[in-house]
Length: 423
Image (cartoon, rainbow, N blue to C red):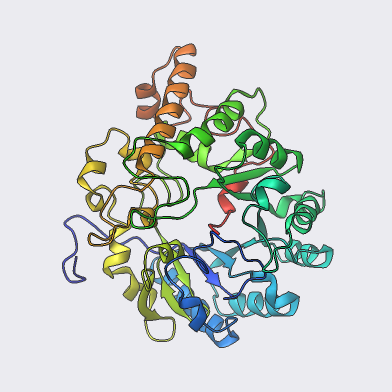
């Protein structure tokens, strides 16, 4: 797909979310991490932190892009590595430089952190700066310590638990985006679920571990017909779905329900909406979604930078186009699937196969089909009890009889899981 040959009827959608890799190093050594332990090792060549001049150049590119496309606000996710490694002074500089150099556009800041360095002072600072905080934790101590440890093998659990409890305090709770939990097949799903609820998190999300057809995720043999990840998630979904008052917002479930009920908004793992996200590396390089680092060296790279190209220049590159064209960019198997409008082919990174690139179904195809089909059956049964059909609700939109199915029934999470990052 050449830059000069756009697809008929396709128009580029402006970027609305920017992930800033402000630190390229981490204080944990999670052995499933796509940055440090999978195919792309380019982090070794990155500066340890993003310099103020790089932040300034990126902010100006965002302001330029927003003005051209009449965007009144964009989302900025502060990411890493571990974004708290720079400390308060670094983050103060980052935020002030961003705000000073992006006039005319509101910047909604969020951060994804492992929580190890999130003490009282840092929490108060982030709340004062209106930064929404997401924390990564894989469940109870046993589940979390399977993979999320320090380099010397020490557990990270106690420090992260303290950080989550700190963010659930009344003075911090409005700035707490929730918990991001990577699925570990070796852990009991309901035990993980209950342990996260016991921490009082208002919102959470479950992340499938990154892998590809060429390097499958743990416990998965593509094509053997098993669905271990769907089997792990379904008991949690059923308990969450059947609760009279759902105890937390769960992004993966709410997004699937929203799409099944006729909605279009989602994050990049589901649906056919254009992906409008770009990553800015510590050296100022533009990258596609950084989970593509699971595929091969340089998979996420664009060869473009905040210092030399505008964001509109980036919009026309083949990799960005491929993630914005929806159905026409998917493999034939996906295009012919009855669930394609909900699944959307799965996360782009998970489609990679050496020799054919990313034009494949997701390596999690069978799991996604099983999970979405189960959620669709449960939804259909609920609607039937209300005298409605799924087709009727889809035609009129999720609010037409679908209340309480996709919205968490008014949980305290209030959709906060949508702020969570992808690490």
